[in-house]
Length: 224
Image: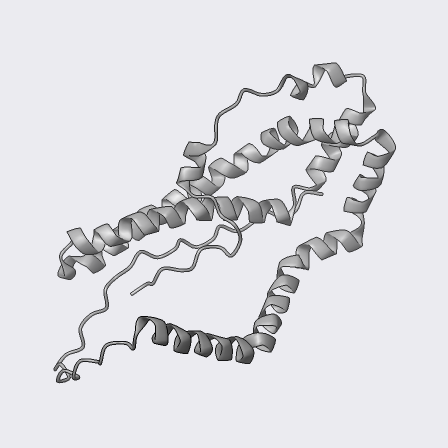
């Protein structure tokens, strides 16, 4: 039976985040009309577009994953409480199918907003904070082949580093965790004695089904 997959390992926003974020009208500064004769508009737009590569795809996946994890956390306990065990496997399969559709559609909803939100919120900031020459330098930096290559392998580099860091610190962390357990046992008291082992059942009971995290949609290639 499928098990719940851990949520994406970055800060994720669940459904509640969308409900809490106030919907503010677009700022007047985002209108392109006042900047029609300003060459900074073209370069600010270019800089923002260059940033919509792998990092933006990962952000979209993280945000969509947060809302999907909310659904799993909400419905898994209700599945186990409301549905009889013989029916849980069938119901889990149906819910997982709906969960996959939800995840795909939410990912598309968020991705479709990327360009407009980038134009409305980021272009004015670049125009305000950077002069024309600075934006040209930023664009040249983001277009450099080495930087594009770095952006494409950055997640792999992060995974390699995290794995080696865990490996290097594992023994000391485990030893420190043991010290904590010993101190906690002195404060709280020892764990209750384990109950006598029951006789082995003649048949192996089926595991409790759980909702599965949908597969991650394939990220779009970085825009050039």
